[in-house]
Length: 222
View 1 (cartoon, helix red, strand yellow):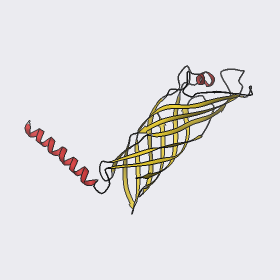
View 2: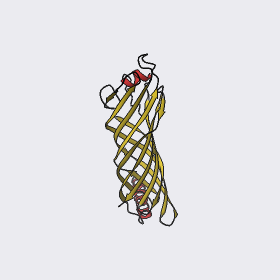
View 3: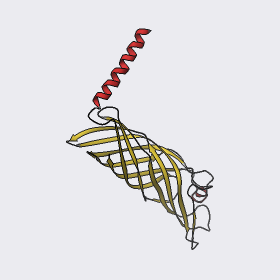
């Protein structure tokens, strides 16, 4: 029994030593800022014509070097997503056609595994993937009906609207030039954020809404 414990301790120390030795050319922790544009939509059923809505995200980036090539990445981001919808109503004959614009403001935290490989001097190609978790801080939605002159406006996450908790998969690729970062990333939500009794479902006859997002980002490491 004691021999097995000694072997486990030895293997643990060996792995720890190798990991630190392989990452010694790079700082173990790297912090930075990152921001850019969002182009978002949704995976949803029976919601008419979907159009991309532009937004943005900005936040802090954190890289932890496990080995020289393998990293863990995270950081809090403020992210603005949404969608533009257009269609005819199956809910009421009094609303023959409509437009609906959603804006959703999130605090989002990804937890990514990243692989970095050096291509030429001072440039690395990075691939990353992992889950993300988000909480809705606020937003707005406006419903414009052709039969009315005005628009019905409200809070996206208000009563009888969308759920605030979102989570899903984030993956992407980046180029790192010393301290500069150029990145593309994709988000696909797993959470159905549509409350099954909300106003959107009554109008659109839909009970499914999952966020989708494509981002173009630029960052700087300190």
